[in-house]
Image (cartoon, rainbow, N blue to C red; front, side, top):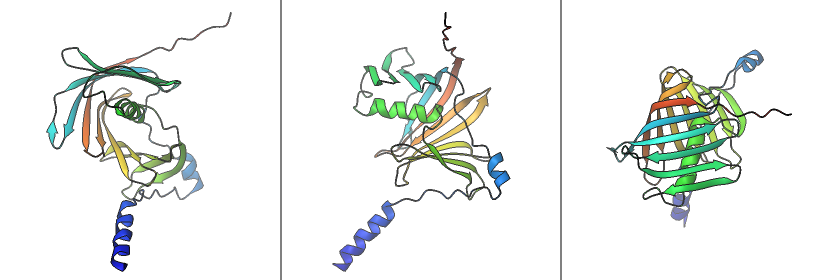
Length: 222
């Protein structure tokens, strides 16, 4: 019985993760002057990326991703297109939820649309959750931590060697997503890498092809 209890305790111990410690600025003036890293869109954009998928060390053929993201309304629409111009997947997310317009295999699974929309929002839109901590990690990185309504955590960090990164953790502290931003062109990053921790880990390398700001229509009162 003691051996069984010890085994269960060990499994539980290793299944529980711990978020990296963020050391708050020591002084009040330091807290007031602290600026959180913010790689997110500042206005509505239409973005076109070449996307390479990597799984088990193998690079899949590149596809084209088209994204329309609005940081003010948090609405997102996206499409996956082959190099020949065939649309494999198309969906949008707004106040009424996610609407899938087209989904061909292997992009027709029940959770694919939600996961893709969540990843797009994680990359391009600032966290909705409440800021819980800000300061520096043990390696000197500037860091801000947010907690989402579902209990998950989002860390936005920045340092000289790694650049800007976003990490999403489960409510228990297990890493789910890691996003790295590389090379800027104006206010838009030229390359973005997403690493996903799932049953089968995979990564996406997004290379910018086109970035076009979209003007939001305004209506004047008569």
